[in-house]
Length: 44
Length: 268
Image (cartoon, rainbow over the protein chains, first blue to last red):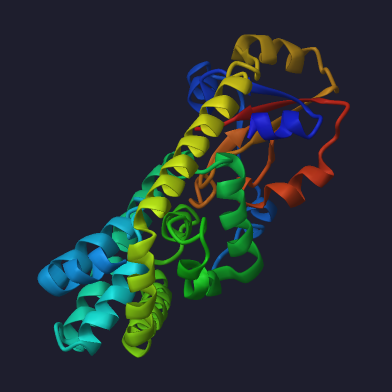
């Protein structure tokens, strides 16, 4: 994904360790908003 | 083709089952040719149509269900592995994903006929958390169409195929050289594109460094969640303040992204 963004002219970086490392460091999290959940394909 | 037809007559049922299963698992084997050979062998009364059709459908359903299940758990990790033989692995995934976004579950009805999407559709459906019952119904319909179509081609055009294969036999050596040359060119191209692409191009950032920028209220950054299926649980969490970039809808999503900001991506 990051390479694709860079190919499209964006300044892209990757967070080392991802969400797991973020959670382990005790940094703030939030619940996924309903609006973002609704965007996903449901196949209904 | 002649050799495949001979093999179909001698080891018909096993060959068809193995080749069709292998293709559905992502291996580069010609299931369509095996089905055509099966149809031709059936027309020659060497095999029985119900057995050929049932075995082919069963083999493909087994393979598709396996990759669907793996895709459900492995997400894009599996998709990337399956696309590895493609000339462009990234667009290989995105092309299949775009088809699902545009056409939804109907994709499964015709995916088998489209190179590049045929092996990707079941694991992608699993990655997108399609309901198993729904997947089985649509995949069964698509598999039946695919198996029936190529079997019928082989059955109806048996005599025509025999004429072609006789002609093919006379130029077999030339075709063999051409195929070997094409394979060699393909391998050289893959090695060249691999060496040309720098694989450490994307900088990796420690979370402490990013956390410092956030605490300093730096507005020139954006954090983006690019998990392939992390949002399908009601209790899903994400980094506070991050946005979602749906990898399966990439070409549409990037239109809304700001080019002046640093974008930090994360997965699970």
